Length: 328
Image (cartoon, rainbow, N blue to C red):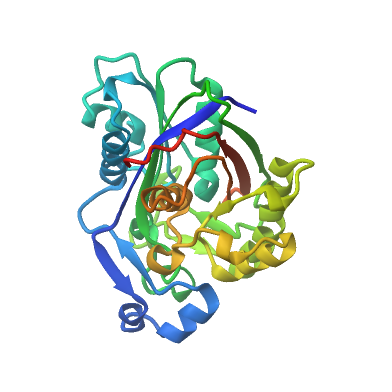
């Protein structure tokens, strides 16, 4: 358990809305087919903004909403599997854009796919000594999608979410659980650069994201309840006021709801509008819940996700009275 609390949230998303009907003009699919299998109605795609741009936008919103002096930021972590560059990291690009180059800041990226933000949050909670941590999940998955592959292009979108976190003195705290295991069958996989590019056929397709939906589903319905049960410990699920899950598929969330006996009405869900934004999924939803004033004093939340690797993680957040700012 770590004595830390969130003091501000922000989010960003792609500029272009792509509806299910739009995708029906590209691949053999329909609005009814996508909705019934995923719960997704539309997703947003970035046309000009790269991953760091979305991360910066979300970070600036979080800073503005919190009202903090940005020079208090001493740690920047960006969770992403779609960075702008091999190097430098997106976190360093965020640092530069925020004008923090002359401050004592530690900045780096984390790749745990859709669990990435929760991994980053846990790392920040352990690393933060003084000052404020800026933790971001950001993705432009559209650049690794094969838009002729119906199995993947209907699922994913672009977005970012950011939180500001500091040490708490008021009784607020977070507890974490994170695990991983190998994906030997490459159920969720995107190739990288060739080890020997001079031997690679120049006509080879780009390294697109590939997914075995059935295997990913099986993993998700095992891993999400496991992570939630671990952060609950001996407490009942009835002690939780809200779950903000990774926004992957409505059928997965419905299964988790039934498995744990937790009402769907108490889950914050926005996948119908944004689809699966990988590491951005949980913080984007958290940012919207914060903005809509659904995050209140004396609440117990669980953030939970799963992703490629395979990885899975959860964070239990206790918000003591007075932690949430009514003016945000």
